[in-house]
Image (tube, rainbow, N blue to C red; front, side, top):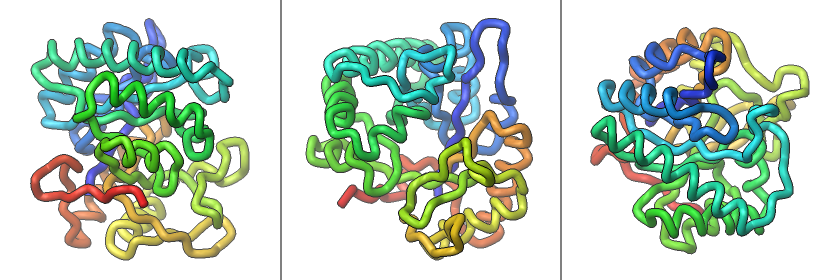
Amino acid sequence: MDLNADLGEGFGHWTLGDDQALLNVVTSANVACGYHAGDADTMREVCALAASAGAAVGAHVGYRDLAGFGRRFIDVAPDTLTNEVLAQLGALTAFARAAGTRVSYVKPHGALYNALVRHEAQADAVVDAVRLFDPALAVLGPPGAVWLKRASVAGLRVWHEAFADRAYTAAGTLVPRGEPGAVLRDPAEIAARCVQMATEGWVRSASGRPVRIAADSICVHGDTPNAVEIARTVRAALEAAGVTVARVESPLRHSRQAV
């Protein structure tokens, strides 16, 4: 099982999360590309840290929304969205190369991530950007998302993701952040859920109903106050359960294709 975290989400003098500590635990880094967060200094630093740690680098692309941290839906025209994703991929690729590594995959952020579950026009726009930039890139997102289905049809590699510290609805979607209990805080509870997802393929929803989760990677949010403790507890629990924690692109692992 791959462990990923959203990193590089500071901007200027404003910092968020402990990227270096998380990169001692996770195996993949979703690096903000300057649109919802991140800047040139941050991208270069996190790419260098990821390269040193042997972690995969992913482009964490989002809406152009620094003020809202990319958590507000924007009804951007598909052509513009394609161009904005291309710009983000190009920026992160430059810093990854400078660090002696490469961008391996693309994971949308925040409101864009949620929109691409059902928004067909924006899903096609992001798929077009990845295909035009580098069709060898993989894409990471939730099982059943429209954009993963379109990406698979376009011939892109598809990796499925589950969330360690987010509650699920009975429909298998994330409970909106504004609702009570949407973000989980207890490391032991989160770790137990992750072991269940990795070994049994399901998780209990906020309403108590079981939800099937077939994941290649589990995300630990870097902006959670105790993110490092959560990540360490999750990794230790997975390894204690006999789960190999490794980059999803490792030869030891096989990605699942969207259905």
